[in-house]
Length: 265
Image 1 (spheres, helix red, strand yellow):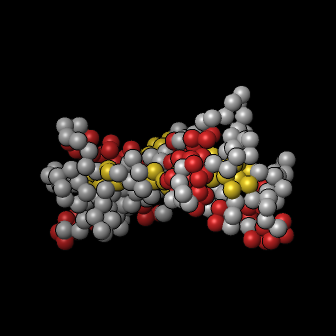
Image 2 (cartoon, helix red, strand yellow):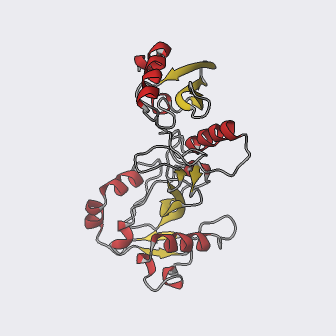
């Protein structure tokens, strides 16, 4: 990372890149190094006002409250996570920075270039967020991802009364497409009364030894809790959780960000 702190190096490289018409990627190389203690925004510089280049990031260390500029010699890459962490239920771990930082940085940059005069072209498809249908739902605990292979091996979705509800939503029941299953679990969960839970995954009909051998990570997670849960004997409370951000900063096939004018940079 030492070379990222050398303005003279980046200025020299920037001049050479103009001569050779080298295009830079859009912006944040330092996020992955300092997370989760940073707030970041892009800085840009160019010898040509008509085609500004993003060459670095201004970084705020929230621990020391100090700002510093970081410069990139070989281009800049937005790599600061998706946005699934903004949801109440998310499989993204705390501190993962999945709060839409990349999109926020890109939109801020676009606004500085066009003054907010035109609709955004730098970000797209943000409405497409993948939800995992069955995340472990226990109070004050992370939403641990329960593999869909559990349903593939016969796990049944039940409400608090023990009624299997998946086929109410699709003929294939638990093996329906992911978005259908997620919607089914969500809808049944909304029917809970008195603050209780109303969506569970039941795999207690399978052989316990086989089950624990087939899903060792699930078994390990559930039994390592302060109050262990045995999924060979107990239903698992589940909830759909935001898992994967499908949209984001718009790029071409080489990963270059699409600028407001339709070009890349």
